[in-house]
Amino acid sequence: MDIDELLRAARGGSVRAAGRLLSLVESDRRDEVLAVLAAQPPVTVRTVGITGPPGAGKSTTVAVLVSAYRAAGLRVAVLAVDPSSPYSGGALLGDRIRMAAHINDPDVLIRSVATRGHLGGLAAAVPAAIRLLAALRYDVVVLETVGVGQSEIEIAAVADPTVAILNPGAGDAIQAAKAGLLEIADILVVNKADREGADQTARDLHIETGLPILKLIAAQGAGIDDLVAAIDAHHRADSAERRAVRARLQILSLAQSALQSHPGLADLAAAVVDGEVDVYSATARLLDGAQVKPQ
Image: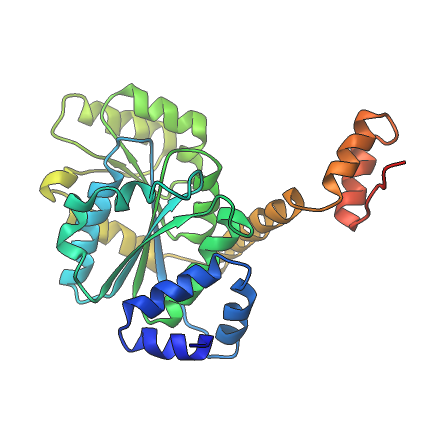
């Protein structure tokens, strides 16, 4: 089937067609898919990012969040984003038990996006996938990231809001602060709130960030209604200024990915090492698309 036929099939409920389209947007045929979508009326979709240190309970939180959205009659797509490995399937897909209730639900799409080796990496693959899922008439896209690092910054550029999941105790909060999570998070959640130290962690995070801190026991579904309400309130408070900030972050992320794969980068680096050009001039040449040819 061509792309138009795949779109019709996916909108008709074909999970296989939707999967094939998502594979295309992760490949060198991404522009073909985006060109077809560009010819159709624009559609937006609510996008929620779930991030945090490993072991914080992101996958469990995603599972109960999906249940809450499905109870409200919304169609949900889940992208488990693993920028490091094309084989692990992402933390969420690796945890079939927690997501078992949704595996056979035709209105829940669960997909791993393993971006290493894919064209443009995380910065390019995720916005294209979200645009496709909006065209396929999903109401909510939930992004779960694996680990902590640059991927979280890139997710913050496309998600609204970005929810950071932390555990009681100083360890997660310190790790999150070092990784810059506290700067990009819109909503902070202390999961496993029945554990000792949860209240103190919430107070410390509030003092550190000024943000309201939610407490959650994801394994029991306790507090999920408050999280859904906070996400909805944040979405309704969105503004043109905030959308412009996210757009700027997306452009910078995509530009960084493009520059990292620029064919002239290696030659420019060699020229800097050999003293033929300084790093400032090399940067200007790279941005101008110039290449330094080896002697």
